[in-house]
Every structure is written in C-alpha cells, then in structure tokens.
Length: 148
Image: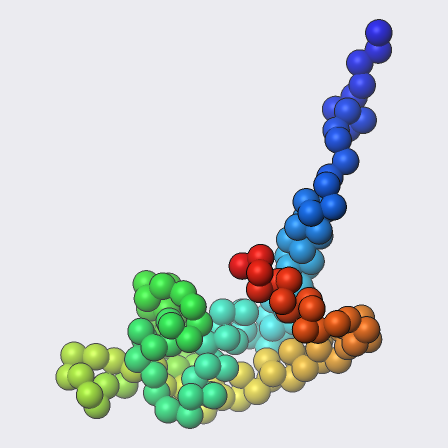
C-alpha cells in the first residue's frame, strides 16, 4: 500500500476555515501595503494612526485617552509617543487638569507628515475602490465585527 505524501494527505479546509485563512492573508497583505506606502512618507501604521487621532481631537490628549482611542495598552502608547517625539512629530505638554500628567500634542511637522500619510491612504483607497464597490458593505461589516 502506498502512503500519501503530507500535502496529498491533508484534508481540505472547511469553508469556515478557508474564509478565516483568507481574512488573515488579506489583513497581512493590506497591512504590508499600507506600511510600505506610509514608509515612503516617513511613517508607520501606528504612527499614522496616533497622528490621525491627535489631528481629529484638535487638542492635546492624555496618553491614557490616546491609548483608549487607539484601543491599545498604555505602555505601548508611551513607547509610540517616545518615537513620535524623537521624530519631532509630537511633543509632550503639561496636563492642565493634572499637575503630574502629560498630554501629547501634534507639532507642525507632525501635522504635515500626517497630511502626507493621508494622501497615501487616499491613494490606496482609490485603487481598492473598484474591488470594494461591489460588496454589500453592511453585510461584510456585520460578519467581520461578529468575528472580533
């Protein structure tokens, strides 16, 4: 009796696992596409995200508030703000409501760099438009949110 090779012996993925695998591969591909494009303007995905939150807030935010808006832990925000500050994109300012607290404020350079990142993101959105246009956005969002 002949043994099947490992690849030939593998059972096909169930439809659910197939979709989950496709979602993971798609998420990785999108992340790589965004990271590569944002790197061209001197940003990473997390840096662009933090700068976008600060631009939209229109005022300096506490690191805790920034962490909550980005849905990440405080220690990660501290490290991210350290990197943004080293790049001259944000600065720490005193919290007017807490003498011990600090807030993150976007700098003029940070606003310009974020605007450059927004142009890159808009270009990717436009390129992806035709593929996404035919989808039932409500149904897809519902399924994706159910998987979170």
